Length: 152
Image 1 (cartoon, rainbow, N blue to C red):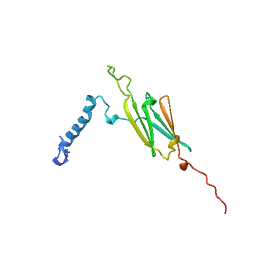
Image 2: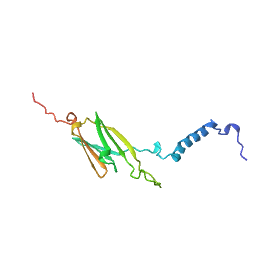
Image 3: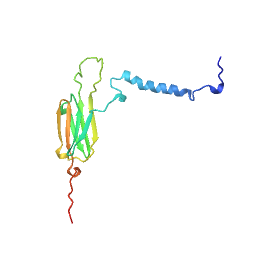
Image 4: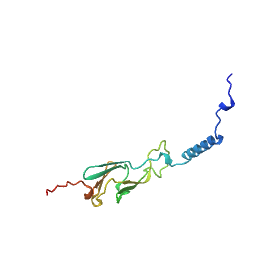
């Protein structure tokens, strides 16, 4: 028979801490079952973007499948590009029950800061196959220029 001394036993520091932790986890879990919306913890950033650049332009490619061009708005303010829109549920209003619903719907707003100054008068946007492509020409003062050396 093993002998356990009183000072060797591991006693919880705060017996109520574990109960408080369990209560908090239950509060986080229950709204998922009683709500029609997705929990904020599983929210993703939408639309997904790829931003690249070359010597003359910055290219922003955004995934916006199922969104019409009339439902999109693009703004540039200073060095911040904003894409706003709404992704509509095509089955809205119909009486259907989902087995799985992974596509999110609703309004979205995505703002990103550009790495350099933009010539806002020459911005072009095109959409094809669910990809929105925005071409942002760099401002002339930010483009690299070759400086010639004058002889004395």
